Image 1 (tube, one colour):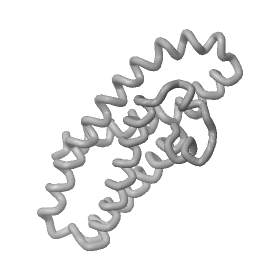
Image 2 (cartoon, rainbow, N blue to C red; image 1 turned 90 degrees about the horizontal axis):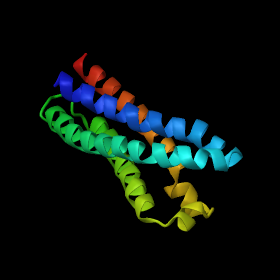
Image 3 (spheres, rainbow, N blue to C red; image 1 turned 180 degrees about the vertical axis):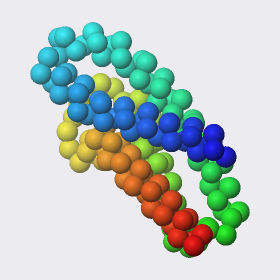
Image 4 (tube, rainbow, N blue to C red; image 1 turned 30 degrees about the vertical axis):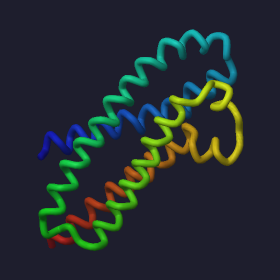
Length: 147
């Protein structure tokens, strides 16, 4: 189970860490130096997409394994189940954003508005940080149930 938790954590770090790098480094550079960043982004994007694909599959598989291993234990309280449900819902939203953005034309991804804020890269980052927080809440709930 240690390796499953490890894989789950590394996949989450890769996705959320990559989202932080994209939001704080790549997007501002692309906005200020579009000509220079265009060629760099054409090289970075496929590699990053592959990392995200691997991370998503790893998160889904390891998440299912971890969930079922916890459900079988006595530490699976009602509070734990509620927090887990919220965490899963937010993760599904993140998966949907990635899936949707890959199917949009570049013109559609540029437009601003409420949909862009709910379905853009900033949303992935915000949701990822919330999911990390909820993972810590789950850990605290498990530890409290063991006392």
